[in-house]
Image 1: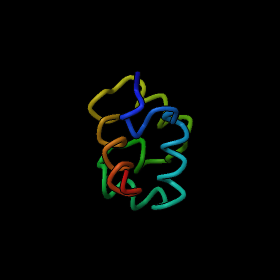
Image 2: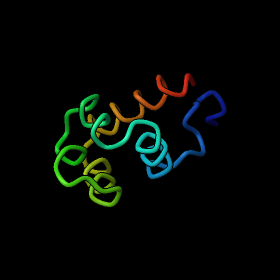
Image 3: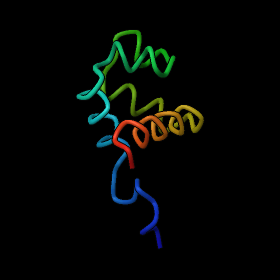
Image 4: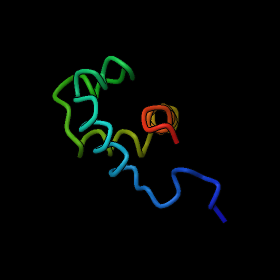
Length: 70
């Protein structure tokens, strides 16, 4: 059971969209230095990269937790 996990029920796409809405791509790229946020960013290309790259996904999830104080 995941009831103590603040990310439970949130998809990676939902997390990414909320971060982009909050920070914008430029600031997101400043906070997490990965090319999919810096060079021609899109939700689709970022999701593709994040689903394959665990360390980057971990950084996105951690930023989400810190940003929205979860």
